[in-house]
Image (cartoon, rainbow, N blue to C red; front, side, top):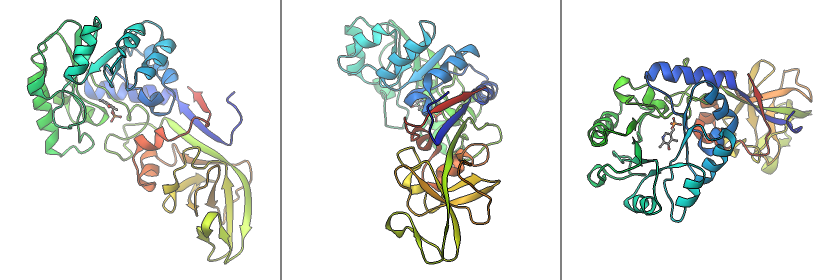
Length: 347
Ligand SMILES: *Cc1c(COP(=O)(O)O)cnc(C)c1O
């Protein structure tokens, strides 16, 4: 049993597997799950362990530390790539945990190879200008290099002309590394068509329930359900206010539920005024200012009582819709669920 808390993140591992299978089928190539940022907040170890049982053999994390923790959880079997690459002085740690850096610069390449090297990947920048070597600076093939990747800047916009430009640039440079596996598509990329698949995909958000185009998609099942318990229900007379700074003023008699989740749990302050939660079969607005530990929901006309659960996102309030209401994206909303919120696994 997780520690008692009014806020809870429930992770449906069967839905995770269903999304994994969908990504495999649509892409037509093996799926190498991205489990950085603690599996987008859902728990990297639990998600990766389950995906391993379903056949996943290669995972991506961002940080060396994330790789070390994942290695401890998964044991010696799977390949774990670290997207940060080989930071200065970190080669020994990477080698010690059998992690494969995705080398991003000439300096990282030299650092890794002068430390004895070993299996590693190489990131090519095909236009995003974030990480990786430009095609013109790509090195000759070298010992240990077993994966070459690039990352799409506009994968969630299928009509963006940049997608095909990046794909073609990647195909050209990857051909120089015949011994290396080619990894190109993130979640959105998987849905762009088979010419984006290359040898293996590298999805994150669609595994965890976000749509490939930043909005709910029938092909992707919700995985994470963020709930909070109602702590108290009160009747607020017309003219009175609720919460800090009188952020909400009742224009008539209102029934207000105070729920046990605030911004220290991952209920972003930007949720108000557009935020909604699912309660008693209806979507109801989050009102006033979200505070640290609690938020207020207008439940006028509902039978809400202390102990009832509200859903901040899940099957009734889709993750992408909740994110849009908070002015952000599913990736940030998921990774904002705080460490103090217990994770409960089902399936
Ligand atoms: C985060 C990340 C991914 C996964 O992207 P999603 O959009 O979540 O599927 C893939 N590749 C790289 C390099 C990343 O940084």
